[in-house]
Length: 416
Image (cartoon, rainbow, N blue to C red):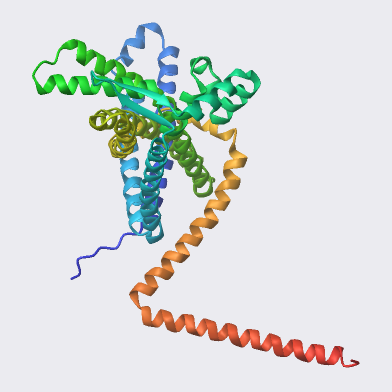
């Protein structure tokens, strides 16, 4: 006997869909039964109403049953998705690309940061007491000061760097510092302060002289260091997750558009997962940036910035794994609000349906490619023969068309 088992993910999904339909019927039944019993009690003479006091609670019992069956449906569909993912060779390659893309993004960020510091646009120096300060390249300082002096040009430049720099929070921040933040992700003051407090705490720990003041300074500057990156990190993660949520909802319309009960649950799950991932990944990235920055501060402010980038990346990956642990809770919580979520999603129904058609075509293309890959792996020699036969047939067809064209042209243009 072989060690492999064959599972059809589509059959598992059909079972999950059927379970949702039955869940909806059970919900309707226990709600109707609850209302009928309530009406019966209210219509009974007062002296006989006590006879109904020990009648079971159909709402509570039914709701408990539906909750248990709902969890079973979530688990069943999750198993179906895992089998489908395992069977999707193209999807596996894409996931490898995702990880490769993340590593590339990290490398690009660090390269940009190191190039900025390497070219001397911002320099960090240490005084006799070991405290770091910073200064910008004279040319950068002069140019940005001139731009700041021209109000209209200064506003345009700040908006070009980031619309966020037009808010009151950055009103008094020099343009040169904002250039540093645009490239290094942090304001130079925050980098210097966090580096100094980190090194002071490390030094005190080495000689056993750490006190609450140094620890409080480390926490305070670390919080400010993280705060400058919170908005951009949460916004970026939220945008990415919102995009993924939109694709998932579009896919749901393509797959379950004719089954409203399933559509409501799956769209609610998509919203719950997007929120769950945004919170977990953003939180991990923010904490990772602080930890990485603190570790990198051993080699100075540049190490703080680069360490924060690496820590943010690692923290994001950890947050991604943590999100998987809380995904089930997020889905169950979102299903409780499936009706209002459905009403909100329905406002954009036309767009989701249109996108869903495109996704459906793409999914069919992926299924075709997967089939070809598996057939090639199973019997590469026969597959090559099939390709050869296809090419020969195409060649014969093309040849017959050319010959036909020659005959047509020979007759029609015989007067030349």
